[in-house]
Image 1 (spheres, helix red, strand yellow):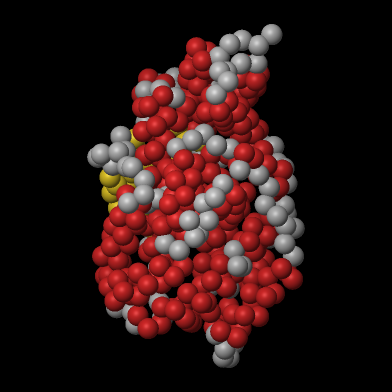
Image 2 (cartoon, one colour):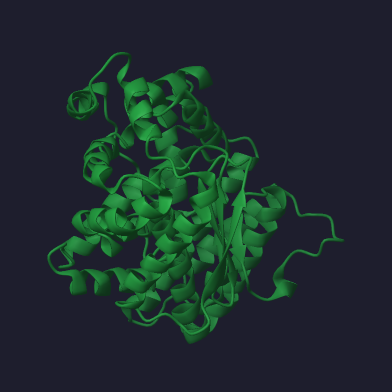
Length: 411
């Protein structure tokens, strides 16, 4: 027999939050953000509950959620489906902590509710051919591309000014289309020793800490990429709108916690990457960077168009990163071979390729969330009328997605 709805969802949501926080004791990467009741956190003085016990709790919670009837309203149904999928992913992560291993695609399906397409080397041939023509010369294509891109490194002394200018521009673009709650803000830090290039740590109360990794030189395109992806209209706005509309607006406490290895991440990363295009379609982006960011970085504005011609073809190689991760994590190639594959098919430097393999080691199939997530979000927004030539509709549909408990399979 099903039990009825709205009055039982809040206790189930609390159990979900407590479960996620308890898993975070065993897995330091699992809880990406939490700003709910402090008393829901496991007591530091108490011994942590075993992963086996937590797995049993997850199974019971899934069964109860599946048996719970909710009001016949789209958002209420989305809420229950979201909680079921998130709890299933938590159960999967617990199994992985207990030593369970699965294929790359099986893992991504169970954690992120999606499977990335598989591409062979022929899929990338057109982009490699085009880039070979765009950047002629001696040596391997990867070395030529790296030498070309080195002309577009932001000098360290100018990085903060360039990045803050990019963030403010992205914020103005976003605030012109989405209503942001008063008081939202962020802090920027520059860090080293990370496997990622940028990170948003959401802290609740409409605030984020945005960290930029300076281990490797930062190319000019990364300023706007990171500003949009980590800030506006990306992760910062996503978390702010969830807090505003769902946590404060509806009292849905499950959104005070963000388990990294879950379907929520595909939506978060997908909207953050697609948000770059929403805020700055290609022509507008090149015009803005040529006028503002290139001069601020001390780069020649007349080279911006050529740089983005090359960058457009490089973006078409993005799924090669998934192929390297899939083969590496499936055991078909080792770490050195994975780095070789990245150098050959994403045309990155060896140093960046090694850093990327470190990311695979730490985050595993998470890599699909960036490119597959962006493609799924774009298709969803455009299918509903948010095409590039209808910017107002594009922003409206995008903002609604940021404010709802949508799942990848629902896109």
